[in-house]
Length: 313
Ligand code: MG
Image (cartoon, rainbow, N blue to C red; front, side, top):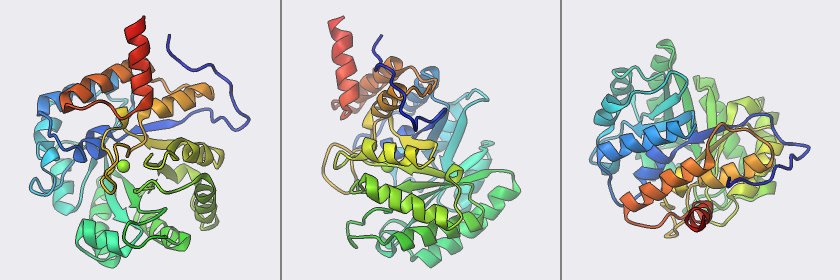
């Protein structure tokens, strides 16, 4: 069995939700587009390995994100077990309607803590983005659909540089007041460090945000993702975003490493004694298979280490 030895820390959580973003955030940022059948097989393999929270796809305009142009065809194909938390990203009201046609019970919206990224990514100011989110969140809540909100650029912005904590707190507060049930605090360019994570979560809690309302979304661009995850767990955060095999690269730096790899997160969590219900080896096999479909090696060190141990035995 390829697993870390278990040494619980005094702050080891009893349970952590591993929120898998590979099929959406990961594949959206890969240069090669996959066939819808491969995507469906990928999601089925994630579920078979024990993953229970997955962002499936995004209802964005096909001309803007060609990698996810098959969102409807994908949802049509999937038969999801009832205990899977399945989420679809929607950019606007039209996207919400398209998702609702498939009986989606949870959606995600994508917000920015900084003005520059809001303009670059959404083509509008933060205020205008909120005007766009408002009807989406209220219509969703009315239909008993829960809403997760991504807050991007929380630890740094490639155009603005340093992002004040107060700005992240303000955007977060506003999203919760709108009716979002969970915030995914994103280190979009991967520059955050553990002390920064502590300071930001402290400031959010001071503003009345509960740690149960928080998820963290770290990128490993500067190798800080697992250290930052440990800091967030120590602060009481219990939902961590990651992408199988480290899918997605980094959209803002030409490095191989973007999203925290789920296998690396599992190595840390399982070593801390957290039972995630996910079969690490099965997941690593899935990531190896998908890397071959994408025509490049997996950027995840854990995937490569597990693959070489499997090859030896
Ligand atoms: Mg990401």
